[in-house]
Image (tube, rainbow, N blue to C red):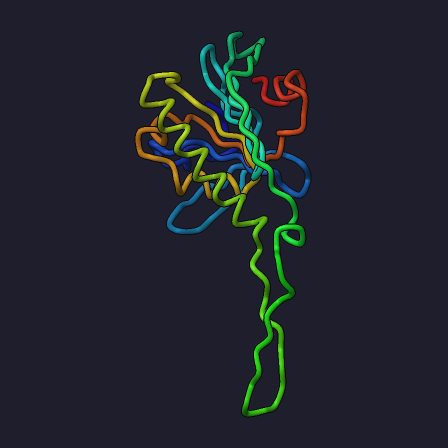
Length: 190
């Protein structure tokens, strides 16, 4: 598990370590003491041992990787790839935005169109959660690290079944889905 540069005892017991990119490009972990949120610089990321799985996802693509190396010399193997077709909302919407007539002022205004692109991303997080549950239930992995943009990471965390959440040893709020596997290994190496 990663270490905090400072008060590392602030991480809640039983909760995975969450890493967030700071404005300086340094990975940070939020910690809470008495309801006050603080950020601490990270010196390391969660250790990715032999047989640890890594989910690298965004709202449209997910890579399920397994480390068949060790923490110092990782060797990630692709075990599964999930992708969804998700064109921009403008290509998914059929009509112009609706109009509303306000009888008290004789004004018309448009109604915001549905963001079909975002809905598909949210649905993808639910689908990934179901896939992770099925894999965990079959014993495919004993430990997993989740790497995803902050919004997707939050959506996934909300959807994860307890059986899967108990196997999460780390979360990294970063978009790495379009990086080659060797670059992901390098970025996540302990």
